Image 1 (cartoon, rainbow, N blue to C red):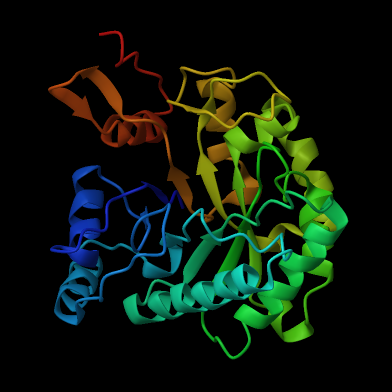
Image 2 (spheres, helix red, strand yellow):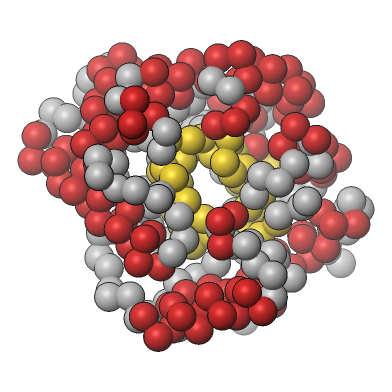
Length: 295
């Protein structure tokens, strides 16, 4: 089955109910959102009444909550422990985000692994694994999805080997809670040709196992393969191309895995800015590209 959705907005006055309503307006059957700012740790309390109404609306419209995603803020960096105070703060905040997942009953949390900055990749990998072992201890019923990154700066998670290195260092009980979120733009920018996606999946399966893939972010890229820049493009308007992305979305080995759009909003002018998700989802369902930007 095709589970397709997009990034949505989690607003204080609408909460999870607003997320579900926005998703339905795009004809999505899943969604992803941040529980607050993606650049800070500021968070507002979760409204239980709005959350209950959201889950009722999800049931009414056949939205499977087990396929929906929460994204942790970018500010969390488990790869660098040069400041013990900051490192412990990020671990503690990650635990709070995991508990917000439980409170919202959306049980998949995507996390950028982090950047090693002044350290090195090997130490960064060890720091991430250690942070996850602490943050996920006694947290039950939530999947933590490490995102595959583009390789910008000193990012960790920019290869299958990076992710395997983290996963291999997890405690046994934590290993069962940690998965991977692939991202087509990031994979492209990290140096992998999406045209050889099955070859990539073969390597991933042999080193980590495809059972560890829990989500795929579907994005075109403005950058050439191996650019390590991470700039998302709308479907069919980047260097990957619509047909290659369709092949990823409908790859039989990834059937039933949630696919989430994070493509840019369209800016025709200051008064005409809109999300592209409804038409991109229509294009995906019909497997047909529409040049909607240049119309």
